[in-house]
Length: 61
Length: 331
Image (spheres, each protein chain N blue to C red):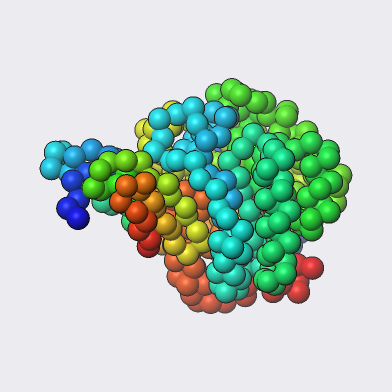
């Protein structure tokens, strides 16, 4: 799947600078589905995380 | 040597009596040149009155997001345009999280829910979850579920929850700037009930919410008056979509001054590194804090953000020759 959307801020990856988002993501799980921009259900666990998009399924750390 | 450090050496180190609000403020106002001496003294106080052990804890969110309260720092409030969605953790995943935490050598596992206070569904989930953890994992269970009724306090004691976290977050005079949906006094009432129940009281807060240095000292004094078993010290990690999303992070040296000051206000408490240290202090600052009064850490991830890998913190403790507190020492 092609990532169209920033998984941190939810804006188009092709527009604007997402370097700050990428830096912040080192200490944050994703919040937006990179394929459809839906807000994902995210569960942070002590040693990882899971993020679920209702359309595109679950990803995990 | 500033007079306050001489006074603290006599009063806090030798006699075990914490500094009052004015003394804490003097520490918070020390120059950068005097900061190493303050940290060294705070470390000596911690070693004398608490010992070399470090208490290691893991935390997990049982119910994330959708909170009706408006704590301005929190991405889990349902009142802000935060990207955090509401989600519940199931019991098998909760037990697995406790196992992961225990595998790090941690003795504490804190179950947290983003709520004003627990409803019947959450209390049922807690009852089942705590029982399942106790059946499968050798670890102490703590909880943080917001404001409680006396009946809920009694239920948690009955479940075997040994420590309850309820942060005052900031000083009484600044609290209305941070939360409008409940009061500082309501939080204090829950803490009073928890104390009376026999559960250990865990109460701290967040620095960098916009409070003044004077209010930081006020907060330390109010915590000292509460005399909690544990004080988790967070540094604001500004969250997108929250009213404090653009707040600047606390300067590392101010954070270290606060660590020393809070230790000198509360010589015997468990002073725990909690959220935000990765951003405010980084690796070097984390080390400085552990040599400046901190004697407990949250390892691994937080509730909605990620922390340093647990093995990095454990390696640091090993490097500093600070043993992880054993479970037997907490019982």
